[in-house]
Amino acid sequence: VQLQASGGGLVQAGGSLRLSCAASGTIRSVNDMAWYRQAPGKQRAFVASISKGGAADYVDSVKGRFTISRDDARNTASLQMNSLKPEDTAVYYCRARVLTFTDTFASIHWGKGTQVTVSS
Image (tube, rainbow, N blue to C red; front, side):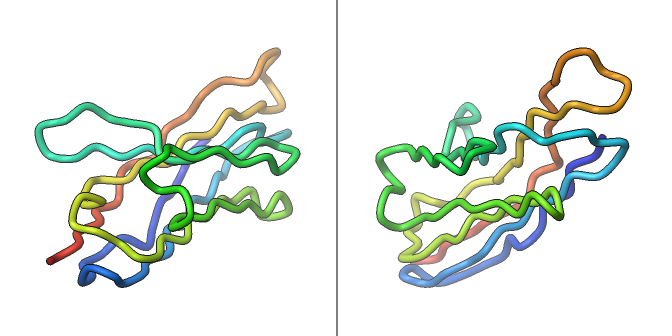
């Protein structure tokens, strides 16, 4: 299983970016998907998640600004980020709990990060 994240970049404060994460491989199903971020000098932290049923959860600091969504037909998740702030600057990582055709239980997979930089 591979997770490919894309969509990062440099944006001014108040701007928007949309991150995408695509899962590929011998996938039977993708359960919950999530985004985490790691700012310089800080630990990786939860940003948002979405269950297989579509229930979303967010860290308080992004509520009302970020929206997570998923497309089960394409095994993808997206994170629409609006009203970006300099403190949103971080490397963003996609995480998914995936069941493959050879697994008995779903396991967690991480993608490589994508850099988001918000200038003031």
